[in-house]
Length: 495
Image (cartoon, rainbow, N blue to C red):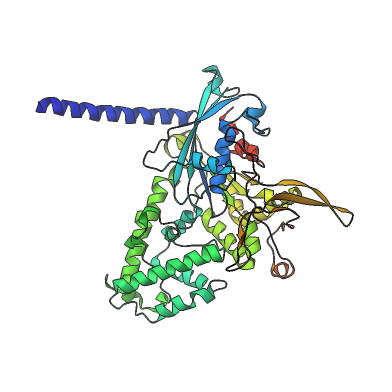
């Protein structure tokens, strides 16, 4: 009986190994013929990631049901056959909840889908007729496997920490906290740190209280001030790490004034010793783990940016968005995907930047939106262009929420948009306004980075809109330029 059990266990182990090898072989074959793409989607909070992924999936699986993808060559040329959702590869990663998102958008009273707070995946199988590639000699129908990975842009902001010591990170963060608009809110926290001897024995209770206070500041910076540079990113999006000691550290100012030997030899139970240890553990167990397990396997990347909300918030908020974009772009490793690169070490070879919420301005403002986004990423874009990476910028609306038209004002034609105003507060403690249908010219978008005098003479009031009514699950969602998104990211794999 024992022998039979051992043979059974051995057989199960061999079957498992066989299945794993078979899966790896299929993936290897797909990569060889460019039949597999891992598309990473990220952006900072409120950039519309969930709506974007929902729309991308919706456009592909409903192609033929009233879709408008005229700039997507496989559809335009009639070689697109069909797409469907299939089980994802990584069973330990949460599934992107497409059904909940599309249900929210197509409800009787439509709502924007709930934002995601961690990493998630979704896999599509896309069938098409090969016409130009070597596959046309082997089959009349080919399949492109598309793995979509959704992850928070805030996590990306952690990657530069991998190259920083605790001392360097503390100084950088302290510099931000002593400048507008963070300075006033940070005064109390920094005053408490000034009373602490960094080399003294640490109080776990005090350290925990200060970590909570620092986390509360990060929430305020992000959601009240509309700032983008939030480190560590997991502090506001902790996921399964909520409550773990690894998230209980904070920057300690003026470490440069401590004797170098004293700092390096600080006891493990001192304040600076404990903070440094937790910082290092965070880098290894959180940041490097994300980089190793997810970031390195991406083939193509889309970065979503909401430029309108920072314009509303003011000069400091917009400057912070510029800094965040710079920090994010420093983290990528781009390069042309040759055969060996595809097989053994996939790298991002296409990068798409999208200015979202293009439907929140009038159509003639789309070009300035793209110009402004280009200005935001100019230095980094120029650098990675030398790596022969294809880069594109677009102004998009993944799910269109307004209609555009022309209105008369004092005898002149004025471009306007019309839509349902989203719930918003008119002031602290005021009631919410919801469902107002308004027609408005929301304002002009600057086509370059605004200078100081520009902020003094211009105010922005870009309005948030609710989704359109009467949308259905089995029809394509209205959009702006999602066909151009698909063309750039996927068309070259479907020839």
